[in-house]
Length: 319
Ligand SMILES: Nc1ncnc2c1ncn2[C@@H]1O[C@H](COP(=O)(O)OP(=O)(O)OP(=O)(O)O)[C@@H](O)[C@H]1O
Ligand SMILES: O=P(O)(O)OC[C@H]1O[C@](O)(CO)[C@@H](O)[C@@H]1O
Ligand SMILES: [Mg+2]
Image 1 (cartoon, rainbow, N blue to C red):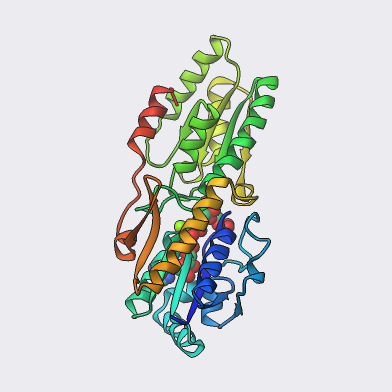
Image 2: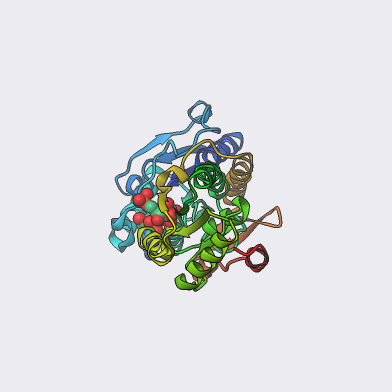
């Protein structure tokens, strides 16, 4: 293989830069020309690309976001958009493509694979909703961002005897909410994967209040309900003073953690190795601290299940 392309698609996340750097350096070491498409599938369809030499990827390992930029592209969902991308790849002499992104981007990767183009996917989404990998890129950094914010909010919640509803991202996944609730010692994690009864929660908060515990942290996954409505219900039911903090895009940025830098470096190199071995239509992932591969078809068909042990742990801890 003489030329490999790389792009980042969907919501950005910390670790994307580290993965690009690793893939580029691995490719160059094997005398492969590396090109980066800007703004995900948008750059693939235009085409908008840059040549990536070793210098182009220096100084980016520690930076959040993606220097190739990312985008969501409705046009790439159409067969016309995909065929345009395919034609550009052929015209440019690109023989293999590495796609970093979430479940949507990997569905796009499968579409290109089904059109006969060699593709390897790298799971990169703070939502951690991609099956066949314990962790996607960016999840660990997002969790650390959340924990930092929750620790800060706990201080002021305690000073003012307030209940805080803290909304975290995750789209339809409660992963960030449940894991951060365990790690930050929150009182509740409200997630789409588990039904909750708000009136029961209010009763429990009142009982806690009567015991002298006059503040609480409720971490709400964005897909599980409306933070303001939940805070108002708590206030109306028990008179507890409430506040809402929506952490928003703060969660998605910042210097990647050691875990994300290492995972990104491993996945980037492995993606190149696979293409050079003639493998295609696969996603590289992490399982039991080893790099594994799964067909993109299985990834797209699969469903990421909440981790049973974590759910039990949350239950034991009363979250
Ligand atoms: N079914 C599909 N067929 C082809 N392309 C798709 C499909 N679904 C998504 N894509 C492409 O992938 C892009 C990103 O998808 P999406 O917005 O779902 O984000 P994602 O990759 O899941 O990342 P994240 O969830 O972290 O933001 C879409 O804008 C589209 O270009
Ligand atoms: O950055 P945007 O386009 O507002 O998208 C936000 C969404 O992207 C994610 O951060 C990643 O999928 C979700 O958690 C969130 O719902
Ligand atoms: Mg997604």
